Length: 144
Image 1 (cartoon, rainbow, N blue to C red):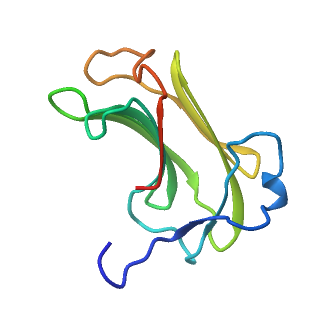
Image 2: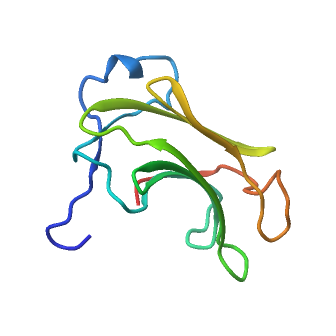
């Protein structure tokens, strides 16, 4: 980030919002501080194969104030992505973000405060494949 620029998303480090109190370990409480979500791509988390920056992964992000789910393959000769976006990112309040990644078939979904916001299947731009694209979820990265 350049000087004077700040991230607009914070991970909750205190008492979690009531919507985040459950048995699932994948329920972080988040807060978008600005009055509107940033009009740029912000990666919240990735899960996939080892070997960054030459890996494959699924991603939860925001882009242009909407949620974005992405499949990324950095192992080929050229980087390929398959991405989908929907739903407005909540601003000015705490909210519960949940996600689910699957590799057979390749699928991702996110919920905000328990409501499904976006669910999609992914397709390889190189092979046209729809299953086993990532191959394994061995590495998890938070933020970017």
